[in-house]
Length: 205
Image (cartoon, rainbow, N blue to C red; front, top):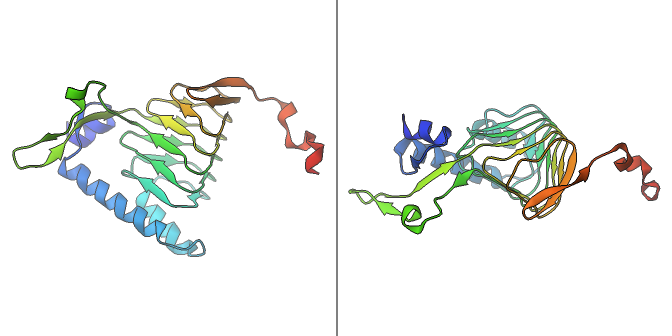
């Protein structure tokens, strides 16, 4: 297996592999170029996002700034949106469905480092190249979710359809469909019901 194949398969891989480094550098440049645009430069921003994330559906986009490790390992459906400071460390596949709302300062973090110091420490090859051991697990955010401000989602997690994750939560385990969940670690608070309709909040009208 190539190092890229190992990475995507969730095995220990060499982050200094030339193919991965090239993809990482490319993504970094595209993120920087996107972050340097103005909001009204819509055509330029769309072109940069198409290069960075070729698997992104119509109507989806970001406020920026953004940071992706690779971009090509992220898959986004239609009409999804992420606010300021969206970070995606897509060393494993990241799947974001349709109509997903993502608040500011949200991080999706598939990478996992060894717990033991000796296994986690940086190493050097004979040519002086620095590397370390890591692996990654995929993240899936299904259709219709809302991740509020400051949420962190860890590798291996699936968030079910139409669920809401409260601000500042750290999601370390799967969340079922149609619930409000919050906390560190994130846990289910309750099911969402028709009584949560905004139209029942008379003070808003």
